[in-house]
Length: 328
Image 1 (cartoon, rainbow, N blue to C red):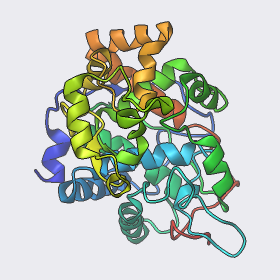
Image 2 (tube, rainbow, N blue to C red):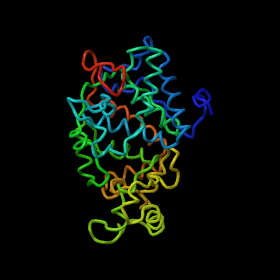
Image 3 (cartoon, rainbow, N blue to C red):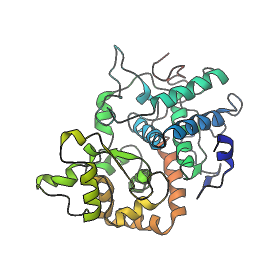
Image 4 (cartoon, rainbow, N blue to C red):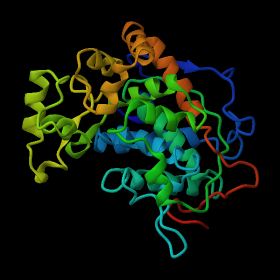
């Protein structure tokens, strides 16, 4: 399938959040690049399509890259910056080291945009658009995005270590990190649904398989069939830490609501995923998204717009980087 046919294809479900969606920030604009870079969406879409065609897993990686960028001092493209003599960047922070990926995809898209509309589109906006295209390409919703973010000129490894939620944290801690960014419990449940695609390294959940909470036994919630499969994928030895398991073992490459069905069946891969069933409020939302897949699709787009507004730089703040890996 080429990019043009993808654009017009009827995916399993597509939700378009029309321009009446409340703006994430009054300083962002749905038509920001209409005159200065009219081919922006097509260039980003083509870049994402090529990357996912080369490696299906890359779609989920681009979505995660956007999430990890926004949760550290706002959606400013700081995760893309290499270390310099004046700051230690976010790429080698605990949540990102040997884990965050897709930088070269953003580089390629940025290079093509610099040819088409030089010094115009921010790396932060490229990340935001790439995440949407990745979801849409996997069969998920499409939502309108307000644009006009500018790029940060610094990054912080310590902030990345502190602010990005961990898969082993209690739900209350994760929710607190979300609320500190202006999000809420609903956004925790909705954005966790991004785990309907992608993979996780064994190191992020292996303690559930063999020594849960230092008991010397597996997590009792895990059913025997999924436990046996995961123990086979992730043997109890250090050499298996980098092995991969699908976050959604049923439809790992399709953006759908099966992630939530897995939680109901006690088949959530990460501890933070399954924890959504341990709280009555979040569990009720999970059940709603199981019953109403279009509700999940609509709410996911809305939460992505909301997340994409965290701490944005606009106007004269920040800059438009020519190279996403370094400040101008």
